[in-house]
Image (cartoon, rainbow, N blue to C red):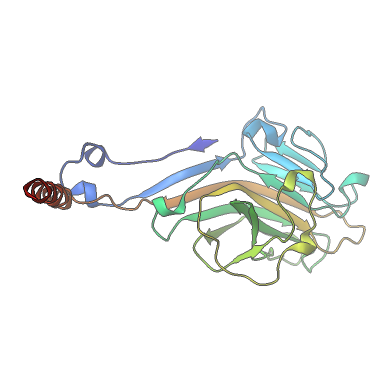
Amino acid sequence: MNSIRTLTAAAVLGLGSAVGATQAATIYSENFVTASATSVSAFGWTGYTQAGTNYSTSTTDPLYASASNYFFISSGTTKADSRGIDIVMLSDAGSIDPTNYLNDLTISFNEHVVDNSTTPQNQWRVVLQVGSTIYASNVIQPVLNGSGTSSNTTHNLVVSSSIWHVWTGEINLTNGFATGSISGTAGNLAAGAISNIGILYEETGYNSENDRGYLNSVTITGTEAPLPEPASLVLMGLGGLLLLSRRKRV
């Protein structure tokens, strides 16, 4: 996991006009590529099926990390316990307070799929938690070519957008879940820090086919909310001194 939070040196020291400036920050970034990794746990991630089976340390189907640059999710005929399954993969991004950023806080992920059908029978969602409420994003369906595969595609989801569905009745995705409980109505997230950020892979139409998903990378970015200008800080300080002075005279 690569977690990066940036501020210019001038901003940290409180010098010059840079204090009021903003700059894009990479808050979290993970590319699933290393010659030695064979499980999602090697990246600090965890993975669970809808039945609550933990595949975090799995090195075979239905979930494992490939040295070829992706998490491999199988939901087809290659193995009995991978047929028609849904898998949620939870990151180690930790907790992020959206109020520390402008309205461009964005969760991005890159994926591709192989589907033995010209109609997608697998789909993706971003999942996260605010307080005790779990949310799932709008459905993201792959665009298949004539051979039933899709190209590597990056999806960018702005956290402040009205794309979030309450996952009714779910408070912990590690002990099993039912995708049918995801609300059909999209809206905004409740106020508060977001945590347990991850990716949900769903198999929507299993017909004895060997469908496969590939999660290539996940990145979280945002522009930090600007700090007050030095002039503003001085005025605030003077205002405080004047208030104290008046209280003393009284």
